[in-house]
Length: 79
Image (cartoon, rainbow, N blue to C red; front, side, top):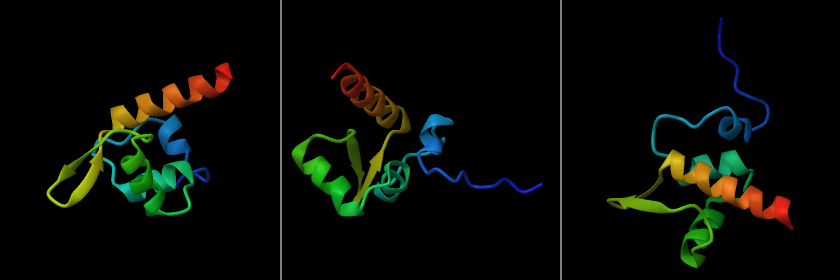
């Protein structure tokens, strides 16, 4: 039986984070962002999840992305 991709891209985050570092493209898919440039703008403005460079590539720790999302959701719920 083949595993189907979830219809909601954010289900990846709700269903548990992958066991690898995330790419900017992964964040675009998970959060339904308009483009990868949004992720880079978040990084420049320091408003997105913390990331780190591996050579010339940007990567994100899945646990840090989950913590960032939880804090963001908590702030929205409190408002």
